[in-house]
Image (cartoon, rainbow, N blue to C red; front, side, top):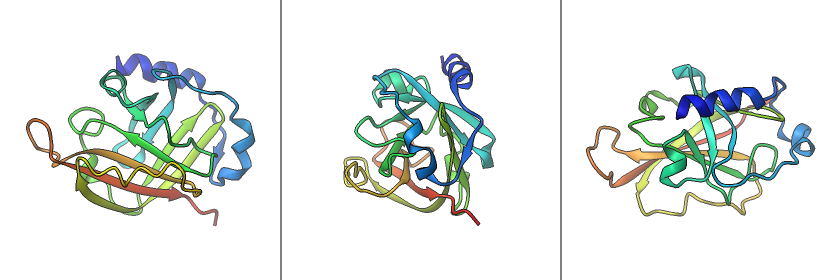
Length: 166
């Protein structure tokens, strides 16, 4: 199912690249419904492309990385929250480091974020979700520990910010 969604996402994304979120914010006009394919989450260090699906229920997470619906999308100048399973889409997530890039490829352009920080929080900690914060940044979460069997007690959270134009 993930490969079908990835093909669907590849057919819709733009090759335009943006490091400045403001320059493309007016290009996004589409509203997404739960279960829709939004784009592609590309992790260069892992050379991994994962479809982004609207919603974070089991159905969506089984098909790719889920976009937490109440958070923003690239160009909204808000938090963007993506979640995925540690044993499927984020299998090698522990290999990522501060300074690594994360790309979000959308119909209206590609947005590049740089990992600046990470933390491990309790599975029930909802403070990492800040949809009203007026700052563009990407939060990516998955269950932790990575090798845990069963329902993991914690969440591994990455924080990435728009790549600065040099």
